[in-house]
Length: 194
Length: 126
Image (cartoon, rainbow over all chains, first blue to last red; front, side):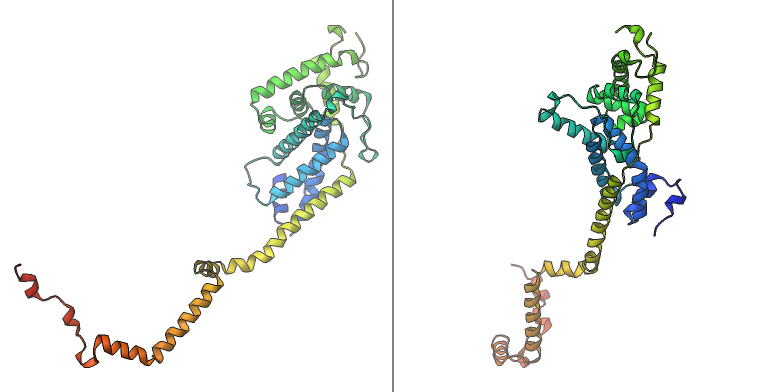
């Protein structure tokens, strides 16, 4: 049985996932359209590489499809689970980069998004993204989840598998570092220099 | 760089808000890759269902077979059954002779009471 999801966007992610677990392909399409742009955006901000972020998103969605059949309703939010998977996959990739010594080469800012992505970043957002990419990895994740993905601290704690206090500490330190890093780029951010 | 050049909290929040408002798009190629993965998972879920059903119906039968040692056990059991029935209906002469030798003929056969202990045996002092 397939549900007319296009006509009813009120269907929860969880209901869609359960429908997919019962063999509904239309549910997979709706979940992909809802969730993938968000996790690609998150992974891009963490990794600084759109192509790599798309690979991570595909990997995370594959894991989601595989758990759909045994998803226990009411136990976890689909988005929290998915962000956690993405967070771990990004951490793995960053660790791998370090182990092969790629960190010695400066991270290229993701200022060349693929044409198909249609993501034209303004100078303002480039300045922010550069500064975010220069934060330590855990601070970066916490800041992006809190201030760009607009997630509440308890949910971030669940995604990152740390305490709420640790999230507060990471976001506070991350913000302070950003303020310092962006001080010389007020003009790019659209603010007049004092 | 002076402290005066630093962003205020409000300014930083505005920059975050602008970034968050940037709509992320999903490339058709990525969408296709992800949906192909979904199809692959669905196909894998359906495949074992077809072969699992007959196995599920004969679970007890399969347990019994494995308990007696598999199909060779079934062969042995069938042979023993046939031989038992054959002996029952048409006993070989050797078995009759054996029975007469050790149990005497049917006229002098023991009675059930012969196997019961006598009250005298129980009352006798030793």
